Length: 390
Image (tube, rainbow, N blue to C red; front, top):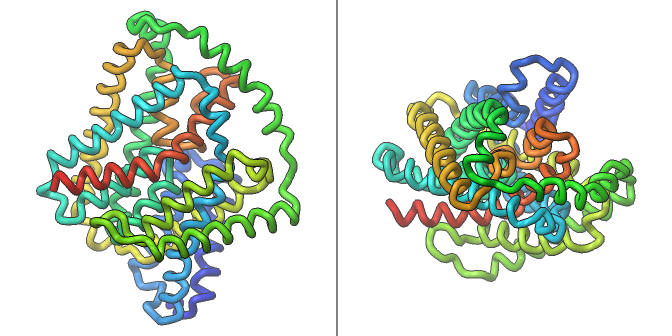
């Protein structure tokens, strides 16, 4: 049993490194189904369930420090790379497709919650609220929302399990339907000329991204100074703001202030400093591993219900997106990229765009970043809606 806080943290960092080494070097097919996020969380949770990590004061202190402070740090580094001006240049069709995908996902959560709320218990609204962060933007948004809503480790286990299985199913469906692009676009009467225009407009941005240098020591130190500075300011301001209802508490205020400041900084020269996403991922996966280490898999009796909820959300999302595509004359590529940019975030959207056409990878990057920007705001709003339905 590990009873020392520093050894506990060191062990989890080694676990993260081992998982990524295996994914990068072994390239087993199983890694196409089980993402590094899921493997890290499951690994830490399984070890924690069997009592590897002690409940000592030292371990608890490290867990509290990481849970409270790594979250805003993660958000800063994830969001300062998002330049809203470049995202808005993607064109109205791309943005409309993304927003339609976001709207139908939220609708899916509401419908599923209304159907199953009596089976989810009193904290079901917060578990689904946190899970929605992963469906709109990715893991960082889910972690931010989960901490803001103070959901249990068991609740987060449900959210991650539901999201991982649903993501695999949805991505498979979207990949299979790409071959129906021409008949779909004919049915919706979509004009696809804007795709070529958007791609040409973003080629220069893609070239600049390809020329980025490896972060220097100065780059890293400047980014760390910005990250810790913004996090400290946000926590200070949040401590002087009132708690409103069950959602707007000091941690929620910290997340909202941190996110807003970081998005603003993303439109300044700070966004050009290399290395922010790498540093952000470090904090995110450590936070994920620590959260998993506090979970227990011996009480996940409601897992089948949450998996079924995930399938219902997918059904509502796809049907709703289909109807909106017909209404607004959206093309299939934009709709599906908007969907995967929401659910898969900046990791999956470029890959999906590249399957359609490698020249559209920059579009996928920006669509994924848009999910990072709005995900936490949308998830917290949706959580309040679900709470009002209890």
